[in-house]
Length: 516
Image 1 (cartoon, one colour):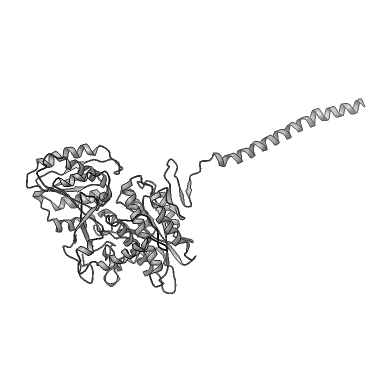
Image 2 (image 1 turned 45 degrees about the horizontal axis):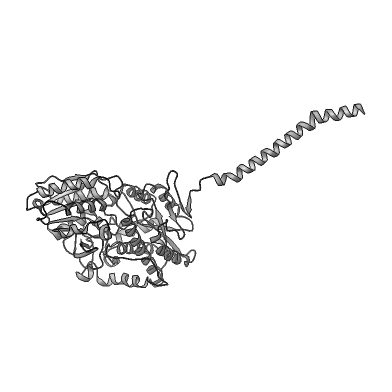
C-alpha cells in the first residue's frame, strides 16, 4: 500500500500535475487566439465604401469605380444615379460594354457639384438613347461612375481599377468625362491611354491635354468634344476683335494646364500690349478662397490706372478666382469707365454661383466667356452648317421625358451652364466610337480598336452633337467647333450672345478638316 501510494504520488507529482497545467495553458492559449481572431475584424479599419469604392490610407474620401447604385454621399446625385442603375440592371449579360464617367464626385464645392450633376444627367440621357433609340444597334451601354477624389489626388487607384475592368465581365471600352484640365487629370489620361483605354474628354480644353501639339500624340486614343483653349481664344478674338492697345491680361501664376494655355493664347492675341500682364497666385486647390481677393483689390487700382482707351480685360484663371475678381471690379474706383472681361469656359461655373456679387454687373461691367454649349445657340443664331436646332431638339425631347418613368426622374436639371449638353455629347461620341469598332461577325470590340476610330469621325461619319457638329481631326480634336459666346447677367444665370468659330466662319458642309 505504501509502495503503491508512493507510486501514485510520483505519477501525480511528476506527470499528471504538470500535464494538467500544460493542458490548461493550451486551452487558455486557444481561447486567447480565438478571441484575437474574433476581435481582429472588429478592430481592423474597414476602408470600403461600396462595391469598387474605398477610402485610401490616410484619406476619408471614397474613390474608385462604383459598379452599383452608389452616389458618393452626394444627395443631389441620388435620382440620376438610381436612373442609371435601373438602366444598367435591365441589360443582358454578355450584350453590353461599360463606359466609365470619370469626375470628382467627392468635391465639396457646390458650384462644381452642380456641373458634375449636369454632366452626369447628360451622360445618362445619351446612354438611354443609345440603348432604346438606336434601332437595335449593339452593344448596349452600361454606365458607371469613377472618382479620383475631389482634386484627383487618388487618380492612380482609380485608373488601376479602370484598366483592370477592360478584361472580364465588365468589358470597359471607354472612359468619358475627365473634368477639368489639371495636372492630376493629365497623369490619369496619360496612364489610361498608355494602357490602350480610349478616353473621351468632355470639358478638358487645355492645349497640353490634347494630341497634335508640335505634331506629337502623347495620349493615343484620346478624343475631345470641346475645343482647345487656343481655338476658344481664336473664336473669342473673331467675335470681340481684341486689339493689343485696348486690353490688359490678368493671369494665374504659376497656373495649371487650363490657365497656362489660356494665358499663352490670350498673350498671343495682344502681343505688343503697352501693359505688363498682371499675375495672381491662388491656392494649389483652386476651389479654395485663399488670399487672392486682396490681390484682385489691388489689381483693380491698376485697371483704373490704364488709359481710357483700355476697355478689355483678358482673364486666365479658374472660376473661384474669376468670381473674386468680378466682385473686386464691382467696387473699383473708376465706375465711370466701361470694361468687358473676356475669359474661357471656366466662367460657366458662375452661372448659378450664389457668392457672385451680381450687382457688379450693373456697374458698367460685362463678363463674356466662351461656353462649351448653350441651349439658345441654335435657336437664336441658326447657322447653315456646324450644327442645328434639330440636333439640340433631340436632347430636349429626352430631357422632357426624364421628368417621369421609364426615363427618369433624374433630379433638377439645367441647360444654361452647358454641362448637361456637353455630357450628353461626350457619351454620344464614346458610343459612336464603340459601335464603329465592332468587327464583322462579333458584338464586342477590342478596347484599342475604339480609340482608332477617332480620326474617321468627320464628313458623313461626324457626330451631330447637341452642342454642334463633332468633326475630329487626325489627332482627335474637334475641328472648327461652334463656340457660344455667353454673358453673365445681373439678374442671375447667363445670356447667349452669338456663336463664334475658331476659323472665323462655320465649317463647310462636308466638315472635313484641311491639311495642316
